Image (tube, rainbow, N blue to C red):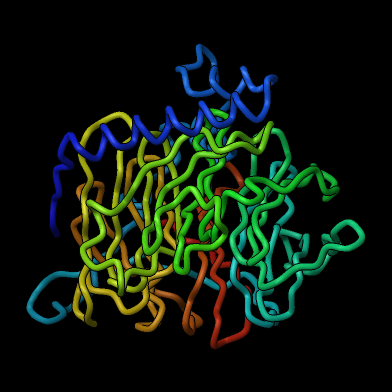
Length: 366
């Protein structure tokens, strides 16, 4: 585990970038005063779906750490904990990449190579509807998805990021001409969608991210405009090998998964530090292509360790504490999603690339 303290230069640059974005937005659109106000603290910020669920979790609902059990025998000389996970259902899905639960409890799932985005039944996994696009638009490798608190949702593909209403109707495409290839989607509970923007080849010309770099962007979900930009160049040790692909947000903490460097970066939007954990390998706390990441209300983190075919568990201080023990093994997991049903019973959705399945597991009670 490694802690990194960001120097003042990064935050000065972030402020300069944000000011420049605001200036450009005001020049291009005289009606964007709402974007500027979105940068200011809100008296009553609208919570994301995850935050709504977290606020509804009563004290009697056990946290993930409270559900941990211990393997009877030490592993590699140490006690290791586990969460028992029992399969509820598994359905065949070609190249599953993104999953979330919407405000109306339907599942939103993407099939990357099949260029498909689907609404599915949470109880069975069966397909309910397919999300289409306006005439002249097509999907190209859809992957990341995010649920918004008002029922809307966002989908990322190689052509950009689109926002849809609660019935799956297309609303808008965001960040045209200013975004490169984006990865990961999250919501911060303050009217913003978060994504990781890259610029591998200097395209498009107006890309807000410098060539060869990766930035964390905040996008206003009502206007589609970029309202904040955080450079990650001071965090990423090797930009040439880095592949920041998965993103998660809970409260003020933002989790960036770098599958190229086998690390997870934890940023706090309210503080001036960043934490890193993970390294390459198969030992406890090491990763081989880490992918999806989820957290519970106490900061316990689960990371899909994709090429090691496992899900690892870390405490709120990012210390390894164990694994999820699946009764039906997972194969090359990509996205994972933690949800709560039946008065707080945790369930975990896992997308298996090699297994070509979407699966739902019950996290067993002690």
